[in-house]
Length: 154
Image 1: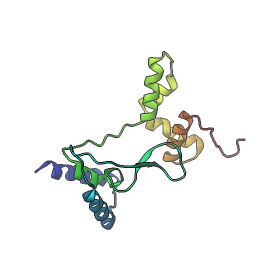
Image 2: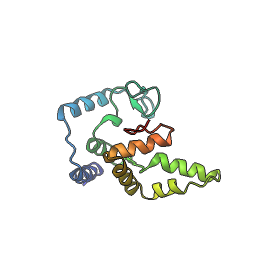
Image 3: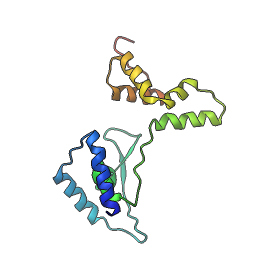
Image 4: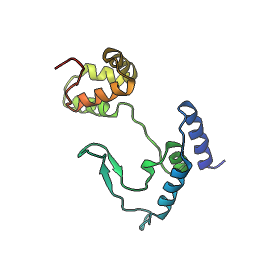
């Protein structure tokens, strides 16, 4: 079994947990676009990135075809043996905690969150009466200075 087959098997096993439906037409279109990208010497290609619609900051998204906008199982299959798909849990908060530590700023609540983000998010979810993803976004927003918008609170 080669690396791509192993990755496809792993991707298939992972997708059983959270079944991901891959639209075959979209996948074929993406693969055709990826195939047309002209690689420069050394295997590099120029790509353009943009912010999400209506945003002037935040996460950048590739313009056109790229690995970023492929479904995870397809990306894992195509990149097996070449790349790793890292998912950093509470990345924003972990980096902030490290920066605070370097500057001698104690952050016991932030440390507690980074140690067990799932439990912390569940507490926020229950306290606010929202879903888990909203609680996660709420905490990320607070990290970057967003004002909490709670119903009934001016």
